[in-house]
Amino acid sequence: MNEREDKDNDIFLRNTLRNIPLNTPSDDFTDRVMDRIYAEQANKMIRYSPLISLKGWLAIAGMNLLMVTYLIRADKNESPAWPYLNAFFDKIKDLKVLHFSFDYPETLKYGFIFLAVMLLFQVSFLKKHFDKHLNS
Image 1 (cartoon, rainbow, N blue to C red):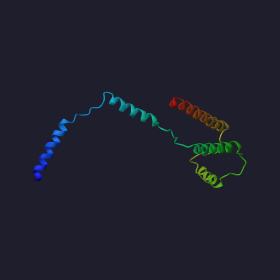
Image 2 (cartoon, helix red, strand yellow):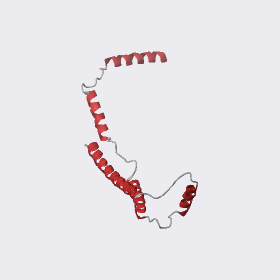
Image 3 (cartoon, rainbow, N blue to C red):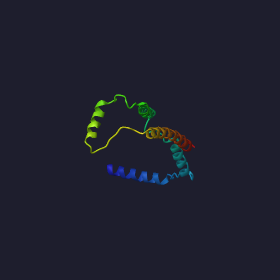
């Protein structure tokens, strides 16, 4: 009796499925789906996050400013700020293999200052340039 019921159910389902019309999507179905996908992608703009944060740049700028200030204001007759480091380099100097000196010419100091200032200007101008072109 179980087999008989299964066959009857099978015949009934086949007849029912034959009589049901197939649903076909509208002609512009693909276009509407793609429009939705493009709209979602437009909403998901890639947010720019810098590799070095503002605090990091401020710390780097502060360290550079301290180094430049130290180099400008350093007096040759002053006692050294790091006596152990200078003692180490004095021992290296005594080897007579390396001729090492910490006397920087004024031109080099001003060159580093100029380089730091120009780098800051270039970074700010490039940031404005890329912000303007990436947001439009």
